Image (cartoon, rainbow, N blue to C red; front, side, top):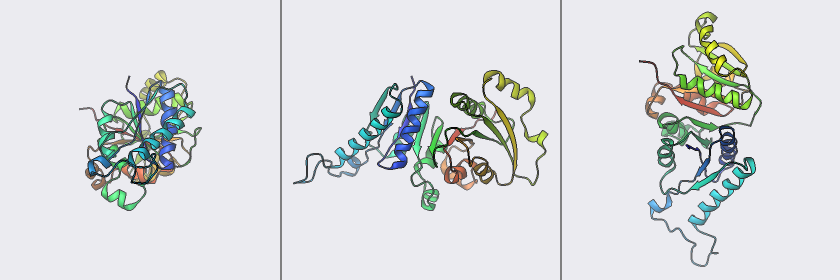
Length: 274
């Protein structure tokens, strides 16, 4: 059974990501896998305690403590979920991208994602959003568990995976769903942006408990979606780029909200029909 995977470091944001991932694993009835990338062996750094230091000192013990703290937090949030940990000897992006091929979902915290250097040089979240083989969720902002789920829909032929993720999450959390249709023009006719009724009927049949609303947004898509999701429990957007540099050069909506949204952001790789 494919797990929910969360990458951790020693930050508070990382522990918030663990809490979110544990809750999501429980909602999905999936196991949870906690990973802490251990890069020091590759750098030939001494891993044990320095001479004269206590036995529990050293880089390896510090890494093990990071995992142990994350494990305790996960069990406190979701005691019934099966949890495993891993300490792969590589850098974080490589470890998480490898795991994405066998994962239900990748979850990380937002540490460093708002910095200009991270945007230009490539953060963990930005690379994962562009290259991971499964959906990626970046935990940002204060928790709003009962806020709406907002999904940004730019075109009617968006991948089924984008709407499926959003509807399923809204159904699991009993939150309303807002379909936010974004147009870059000065105005947008509602009949041209809203999903047709026959399309909505199919989703209502699959998720009858989900309350659906539609909003038409005009302006810069990333900015408008960030504003629309200011009180959301989750913002779901699609990524059309397979590489981070391409996403940055083409003004990716997913990269914009990843750095500026005030709620958790789920990035779904979009594939157009044909």
